[in-house]
Every structure is written in C-alpha cells, then in structure tokens.
Amino acid sequence: MKGTKNVLNDIRKNKGRDKLVSSFNIMAKKNIRKTRKIINDEKLEFTTLYTIKKELERFELNKDLNPRNKIALQLINEIKDKKNNIVTKYDSIEHILRVQSTIKWILDTGLDGDGLDNEYDEILDFSYILLIKVYNDITYTPKIIDVIFKRYRKGYYIYDLVWALFESCDIDSLSLIAKHLLSENFKEFNLACRLLNFIPVIENINSKNKRDYYPLVIKWIKTNSPYLYYTGESFQQTSRPKVYAINMEAKYLNKEVSKKTGEILHKLNKRETRLLVEFKKLSDYNKEILSNYSSTLYTNNLYQWNNFISYPLIKQIEYAKKRLGGIL
Amino acid sequence: MIIIAGKIVPPNLINGLYPSTSIRGEMVNKLSSSEEKYYYDSIEQLKFEMDLRKNIINASIDLYKSKVTFRTFRKSKCNTDYWKRTDEGGFILKENIRPSRGIKDIFLNGREYGTECATAIIIVYYKAILEIFGEELFNEVFTKIHLMNWSYLDRNLGITYYRNIKDYLPGDCRYFKNPDVSPKTPEWQGENAIDLSSGRYYGHGIGIKSAEDIINTLNRYRKKDSDTSAYLLNSVTNLSYKNLSNIYLKFVSNFQISKRFI
Image (cartoon, rainbow over all chains, first blue to last red; front, top):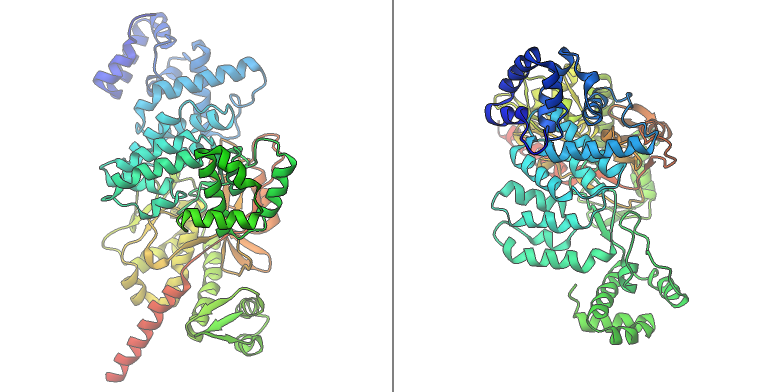
C-alpha cells in the first residue's frame, strides 16, 4: 500500500462517516483479506480506525490488527474502563516505545478530526496527557495550542488539554499562546488573556489596545523565561490561575531555574549564597525592584553588573530605585 | 482583629455576639483573636458574613445528601427541564426558568445531575445565598446562571482566590492538590472542598471527610508507584461577603422604607 492513498481515509473524507461504515461493510463481506490489508496499511488514519471500530468487532478483525491498531483500540477501552491497564502497564521497553509511537500516530492523524464526538475528543485528550505525563514529549505543543483555541471558539471542553499543556512546563508554549492575543475573534483573545494571566501587563490589555500591548507581552516572556517556573495552579482550582511565577532570587542572580521545581539549576558559589541570604530578608517590593534591575543590567552591561552586585544590598536597592525611577 | 467602621472592636465585646460553642461564635472568636485585620463597614455586614458562611456549610451538607453524582465534564448531566447542558459540559439555566427554581431543583432532584467538584462549590454558593436573599432578591440579582467550574462566574458573587492565607474559617473553600495524579484521571488532579468546621470538609465526589481522608482518597488516583502525596494548599476561595451584604442590606432597607409607606 506504500505510496498510495488509503481508500478508507478517502471515503471518510469525501463522503462522510456513515458512508465509510457502509462501504467498509461491503468491502469486508466481499474480500476480508484485502480489507485486513487496508486496515493495517500504515497510511490508515486514526479517525478512520475510530469510525469503523464497531465493524472491526463485528467482522472479528481485531485479532488480525497490527500492533499500532491494537494499541489504539486498547487505549479507547482504557478510557471506558479506567481500571483496565493493558496499554499503560509499561512492562517492557519495546511496549513503551510502541505505545509512544501509537500515541503520536493518533495525534498526527487524529487531531484534524477533533470535534467528531465527545468520546473521540476524550481519546485525543488522553493521548496528549500520556505523551506529556509519561513520555515528557513536548513536540506537540503548537498543534495542541491550536486545538485548544479552536475548541474554545466552538464552545467545546478544553480544560484537560490546558492542564496537560501547562504540566509539560514547555516555556515555548507561552509565546505561541500570546499570538492569539492578536486574534480578531474575541473568545480567542479572551482565552489567551486567561491563560497568560500571570503576566502583569495582561491586566491592562483589551481588544482595542492589544496590538500595542502584544510586543510588551512577548518582551516580558523573553526577559523572564529563564526565571519562570510552573506553579501547578489550574482552572480546576481557580478562575484565574497564575500558572507560572518568577523566581526572584534567580532573576536577581541571573541564574536559570528548573521549570518544574523553580529551583536554581546551577550550583551557587559562596558569594552568591551570601547574597541570597540577605535578599530573602527583603520585602516583596524590594525583591522585585532589585531583581528587575539586576536582570536588565546583566543583559545590557556585564561589567557594570559585576560592580553593582559587589555593593552592599542597601546600596544596590538605592541604585536600582534611582535607575528604574520606580517603574517596574 | 475585627475593625468595624474604622474602630477596633475588642474581643470581649464582639465575642458575646454568638454562643462561643456555635459555628458563628467559633468564627467570630477566630477573627477577633487574629493578628490579621478584618474590616467591616457595620456590625450587620459582619453578621451577614457569619450567616452566609453558616449557610455555605448547610448547603454543602444538603448537596452531599442530594444524590448529585460526581461526573467529569464530558459526562456531566442535568435536569433538562430547567437547565441546558453545554457542549463544554456546563449547565445554563433555561430562559423561562426562575433562577431560584433552577438551583432548588438540583437539591430536590439530585439524581438528575452529575458534575465535577468546582461546579459543585458554585452550586453550594448559590443555594447558600438563596437561603439568605430569599427568592425575590435572588432572582433579581442572579438573572442568568451558567454553571461550569470556576468559569462564567456572576460578578455579583465576587469569587476570589486568595494565596498564602493565615486564618481559615468554616465556609472557606479549600483546595487539596494531587500533583502526581494518574494521567487516566485528570479529574482527580485536586479537590475543592468546603471547610465545615471541626476538621471536616465537603468535597463533591469524595464526601464529608477529614483532611487526611480526602488526601488518602486523592492518593488512590495517583500514578502507579508514586510516592508524592496529595496535600492541602494554604489558599482559600471565597465569595465577596462585602458585596453580597451590601446588596442584601440595601434590599432590606428599601423593603422596610416601602413597608412604612404602605
């Protein structure tokens, strides 16, 4: 079947789901061997497999399926019966890798069919959650963000995908979400604001000034990315979760943090450790001023920053306040 | 400490407001003995908050008894005589239905309904407010109701999430977080629960339990072999008691004035 299109995919795309089911029935009755070959064809799309899953049972074709198709159908069953864990038992490397490639196939060939029905969308959600939580695979971030916004526009359920997206701790997702601030669709714009609620300038943004504010949002993300960490807050917890927060100590010392834990990734030397002991005693306001100034200076003039950081903390604060003019 | 109309009210004065063993008494004692400052415009405003908190507790117990089931948004259900189920899994009150009737039906015909824990909290809030406001005011203030986790909240509710709280009171909505939840059950990533006092909490789908029991339940939905336990966050979600009391007290005062003229 290599190099050619899959006939079942074509029927579904051109003539619809009902026609696919009826054509499959005719095909299976006529030539079961050929049908088996077409189902196991590598070009078969998940949406097609999903549509004919009952027919596969009817013609007792399940036992003849290739591992990809078998795992995909087992995943569907695991969603129905959550105690069932044939797929998610992870008992061998081979099985783990096979499940991962099946999940990727589901997403690669199934995301276009999002919105087919509730069960179908749940399978896509589950597949993405597995990919993030089990495989730490963040390659689908852009596609999933698109699906989230498309669903939100249509009024479909998004919260499991949103949760998994943020659980991935993929910082690149932020600028991809921010692009939707420019959308002419108000719902889309509104969702982007809700998801990026932790960025201070978002409070001032509205549909009229969004073009002016968008570059500020992008700048904020770029400036703070090394110091941002995932807080674990979700829409199940609050209407306005602050999904990411800045590690002020890291920003002050210009050290990158772990997105998952917020801990500084590099080992601190004695001087840095001493500085942090003093920094921790400051008010939140002073911490913010100092970390903002330190980070800006570090980026613009490393020589001056080295001088600045050698001053006593009180002098550093005075200096930062003068230079920043109280503007954060 | 409690500050009413700009003046600190000494604990000995305010603590006599309710019997010390009552829930309201326990709450007032806690506020007045706290190092934090709690501001009220009037004693009526303070009393309103205490009454509403008590009603939140009662409504939680009522919802627990109502047989409303726990269901994910994808499988949520509602009584379609009163509510329209949205594609997202939330419920919108039908146009010709009085809001008070819609809320009451959830408690009367609980078996017809199924939803997640956050939506259950909003239902509890509406019922608690309805009990204080009465039908007339409730229907006037909450003309459109959309129940769907913490989304589409009516501004009059003034629901706010507070982080790093020092004092916790009965009627607070707390959050138990389950950081290592199984990928199969994202609905158990955490549990919103109402503090019922005496160390008991109501969490929809879990029931009325101690914090430890709620944590143990959530832990059963963790990833296989996980050793990271669920835990109670030091945050709370609350209604805007001030805004709601202003609405109520204004209504009561107008009612009394109009009564005088009859």
